[in-house]
Image (cartoon, rainbow, N blue to C red; front, side, top):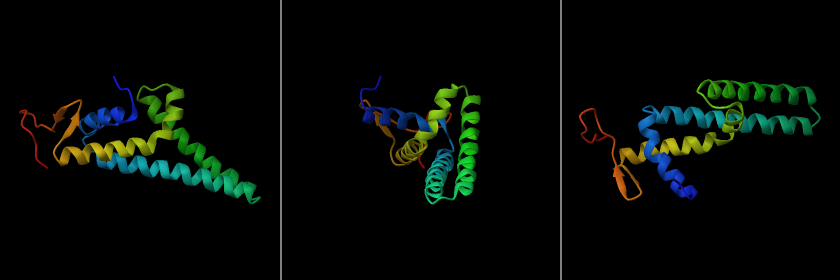
Length: 129
């Protein structure tokens, strides 16, 4: 269905705002979650490098707990443990695509494979935001 990243981004952008009515809220939460993963990992490595092994261990334990919560939530949504484990690495990309999808729908719709998609209400009329 997709042959490159640009097509993947366009295809997902077409669908995400419709799949997640609260796309901005979810995007912010996932971006913050991704940021926390990066900060905890960097802090844990830095603390270990500075010889503060107890602090490093506690920081990395917090990272493991955060990652574990993420795995549990995504696995409960039907994804495999392997996919759930790796999905934390895509949090920033997912957030970007959610923001992009909502923004484009609010500003004229999404074009995908030459077709323009708009958010529609229950009666099928285009909704202006």
